[in-house]
Length: 95
Ligand SMILES: [Zn+2]
Image (tube, rainbow, N blue to C red; front, side, top):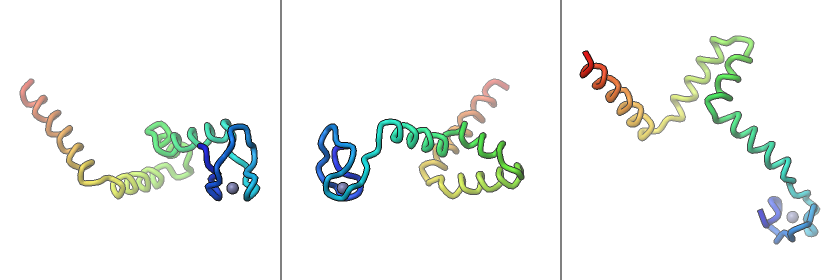
């Protein structure tokens, strides 16, 4: 990140604060925390943790599943279909 996230002013290597608008640049720790939070929000582990921590687990699960369905694109559906079809074909060939 070599520009101010607030005003896009060119950032010097060791500046802590933007000389133009006074915005504090994010530190490495903040960036890592942001990354961890994003990971928590978008990973399967984070997904499970959110459901387990919820007061009403059943409702939380339904909400997460609905959100997952809405976020899935046609490409995602096609991939899911391919995986299921493959497993189905594999099962049939074994039987
Ligand atoms: Zn700035």
